[in-house]
Image (cartoon, rainbow, N blue to C red; front, side):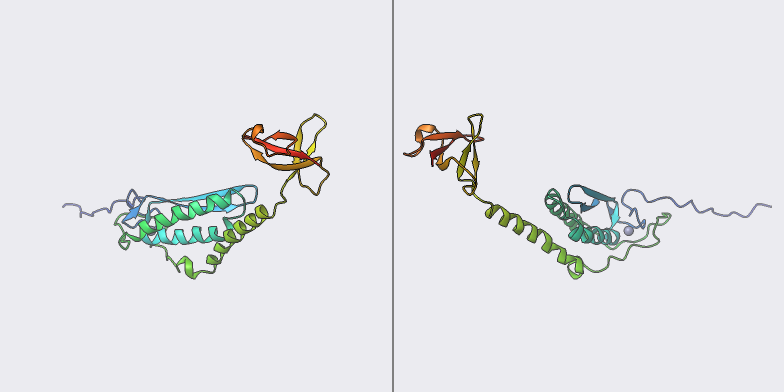
Length: 206
Ligand SMILES: [Zn+2]
């Protein structure tokens, strides 16, 4: 008498290429989503690696980009890095949007039993208000530059050189203008001071 034949199902495997790392569904794209936290003098960058199915990818995009909208701007370097990462995420988001709806792949077991709930779009979440932060920051930098006092006077240093100072400070003379060559200084110039990169400041004593 023969033994009854039982077909043993193959052991479930982990998601592979083209399958979502999170829910195991396909199709999925291999790409990274980024997060960035500005910490004034330092920063932290977070990476979530795919492959992502459409729904998990969009959910991670919204979560990481949403946090970045209010955590990402706090530092001089972060003001530059954060928008770049937001754009990289947005490009990935557009690519994910082109995928068809995820469907489970038989025999694949992943961390999540189903694709993530993508939730509300970013522009309908309160975090979108974070976009005002870089606008205010760049406006403040602009105002600081525009209102920096001009250094239109000079002061002689003990070593015989000079330095530019604000005219409200003690000084020995005024800057009449700049010239590429000392011979081109305006009439009335009684001295000159080399500029950092090229040319000269034309000076007149008080
Ligand atoms: Zn997924």
